[in-house]
Length: 86
Image 1: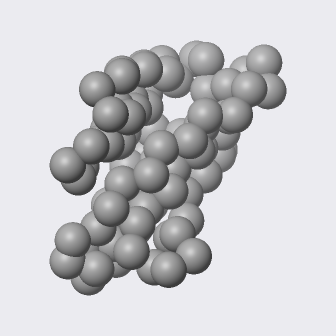
Image 2: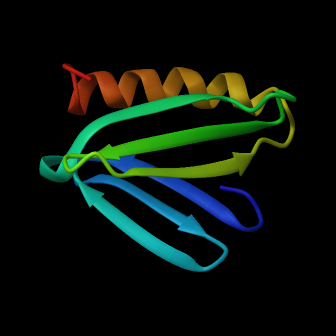
């Protein structure tokens, strides 16, 4: 999480909060989850592809920048556990 946005990935699915607006994606409604570093390497970008093909994205600033590497490691583990097929 940062000052404005947050991403939670857990047993229930994926949840985004973007400037106070929250949206939850339960696992049965998710086709896939993707993540990457922003172009400047200062933020985590997480995308959820809904089963109907709709694309949702949330960006969370990583401060300090080294936190981004920690988030990548945790995301890989959590997604591998809850979504082993993608």
